Length: 458
Ligand code: OOG
Ligand code: NI
Image 1 (cartoon, protein in one colour):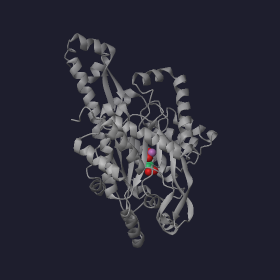
Image 2 (tube, protein in one colour; image 1 turned 120 degrees about the vertical axis):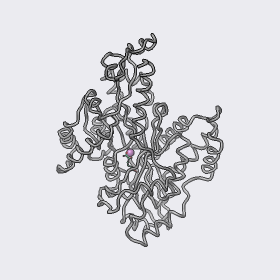
Image 3 (tube, helix red, strand yellow; image 1 turned 45 degrees about the vertical axis):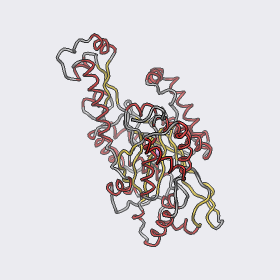
Image 4 (tube, protein in one colour; image 1 turned 90 degrees about the horizontal axis):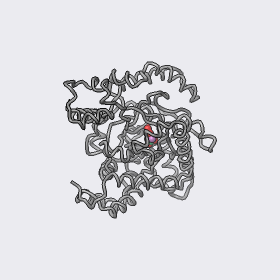
């Protein structure tokens, strides 16, 4: 157990997400503008929907409403990924799920470092979508060797960051002072550098193989490439972006707008073209950094997820819409086959739910009488003692992620790579297996059922 005088990992994560946000708003002013728009739209939604305001207040979510929910980085080597695992663990963030993006023509595979238990998710769900470049997907032998050599020559961590990680591991935590120092040092890894480490010619050769390869290989570190605040109305923010001088990507990714939101909807503004100085004093530009927004809904069971994937596939068979409104209409038609009321979603076991006592249930639990001999959850719900609320999805969607990647790589799509998923290689690089997202949601659901049963003696 961590020492009392240590700062809780959740608080270190919050220090980190706040510092990152501050740095990124200074680096990318348009991101600050997006944050403002998101906060305004969230205020409008709350004013128009008092029950939502009430619910968010009860859950203690109002304070953090418009803050970042995730960010993303891309690293080049197994050693870099491995060290990041140790860094994020100190902030209570652990790798969940494996995402293969090669299928979508992006030469990386990824995981998300995130808090996994209920209390930590509630305090700050901040996650980092982390991708590892797959050099083996570069076809040209000489270019692949050159990229590997450039990567081998860099250390993306400061000496102090390495020391503090070792110290945190040895003493199983950090004091507040050490934690502040740690966050400041770790932030250096994610800072933008205007100076590339390679010549313009090398940059261009890598860029021609794939824009993402140049982004990962040619700089001193894995600059944070976007941050993502939470919006209560993604359609409205998408629509209003141009009016505040922001250019949104063409389509909102993920499921359509629904009464009962599922999984994750995302959109971003397209990456900015930024000036870069190359080795040998040549100048040019690089396009990698952007801002994103997200709106989350219910986590789906494997059965619900299979239905989502099937419907998403079906909607992708139709000719692609370039216009978001047409795209959303088409999606909504296809998703008419996905139940959109909580009772059906629960009865058909399409989504995960958290069970809790109603006021009547609390009274009964206090009275100490056992809930007759009924053991069925549904009976307890019908009796008004227990209520079910959806568990929020905390992970990512590979098709959506590919859409986000692609719209920020300057538009030229790359064909799928022939090679496929390689979770074993990813985990070997990472230094541990990734956790299974479905197992985590099942546990949240089961724990809530267990608590309800214990309280009611049912
Ligand atoms: C990551 C893109 C994926 C998301 O929200 O799905 C992502 C990247 O561009 O590095 O962040
Ligand atoms: Ni993202």
